[in-house]
Length: 399
Image 1 (cartoon, helix red, strand yellow):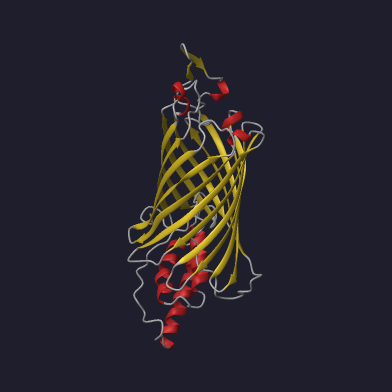
Image 2 (cartoon, rainbow, N blue to C red):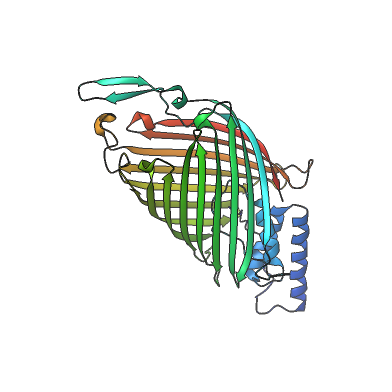
């Protein structure tokens, strides 16, 4: 997600009454922002340009520099691709002119549950005449230890028409641990986004994505998703957001887990003097494509995010806090042998804290990353109860 910051730039004047002196002042501000971007001082550049673009959206070069600043601040873990910066209006604006960026992240850390195994190493089977306790196989029991994660991300975008932008993002990721099986995984994500901006600051976007995940040695999970979003005009500090999500999931050689999901979302994006905040609620229905245990599911998810600059600690650094809550409920009994054929429900909460700071002593485009995440999942079927605590430390190279 782009880090949007409210700037304190004084109002220069109305957009329809800018004289020669006013234009010279605007040019000077754009040049100052360009210098800040060249020095990797993206927070200051974004602060300087946001109010300028609100007052003078057609200011030559301002949108290009603002896009550079947001790209510099963007974290690779963020997942709101439909909120995009305004396309460039300076220089070569040919539809064939692609603007590209990328980053490589390598980090190591510890997790108390690398394979997301059940909390308990045993499972109770509720047979018709008795209850039997069985021990899970070793590979399905909780495994704690160290791991190394790598992620390569590439972004490309170009302006197709006035205020219409096309962006493509691709990711490759890998995790290696002391364990094999379900603790290690590899995957790829591809997302294509079209964003139309309207007068007054509203935006409408559509995205199509494809994800592939390999885990457990030779288990492959594929998902295809489509997202529609509309972001309304900004009020005092916030913009409303509404949308539609459609997702198809397929596991290779295991059609029992195939499904399709449709849901609606409402949310808000807030840019204040105290930081950037967002909240979104997604609710929908997941249809089982075949005889999936538990049948169809109802799902509700709440995501909240806050981002604050921390120049008082390290210049051009920022903290990101995020939390998510998921509730799902099966429409049919999961299994007659588990909890006497109860309909399964899950509720999961996750809390995370990330810190990102420049490593100017090494290189201008190097940044340090540190993160801590806790997750706990409860269920009326003990097989699906799990929790984990993990921390990671690494570096990110941006270009």
